Amino acid sequence: MARVLFFTKPGCVTGAKQQEMLRRAGHDLEVRSVLEHEWTADELRSFFGEHPVREWFNPNSPRVKSREIDPAAFDGKQALEAMLADHLLIRRPLMQVGDQRRFGFDQEMIHAWIGLAPVGSEDFAVVDGMQSCSAPAGAPEQRCPEPA
Image (cartoon, rainbow, N blue to C red; front, side):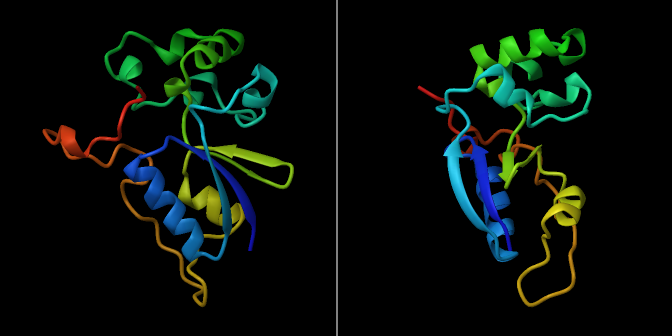
């Protein structure tokens, strides 16, 4: 089992489900706020590996959803500058195990990396809705809280 440094948005329903899935697989989590962490460009960049810049962005960010920001229009430097100014743009969660870092909650990738099968089971099944906002349409009281 792994010790996972897990950056998420406090109060995010999907983030809580992701954490529970990791804990059921026997992992120990140290949960931190992606919004409150004092990121540097180099530190943040280290989570994204060789993935295209457009994938670094949180597709559920209000500014991305409203099309104020088009992730495809950014180069790496511009993306990091935007994310350092607005942490809601960062695709979550950001995870670190040892010196390895990843972003997003691609369950198959995480299972191959550290394992997602529940403790005592060899079986792993992908769970729907683990990368998007869990709030149903028209239910603002259930949406992840925005920072004050």
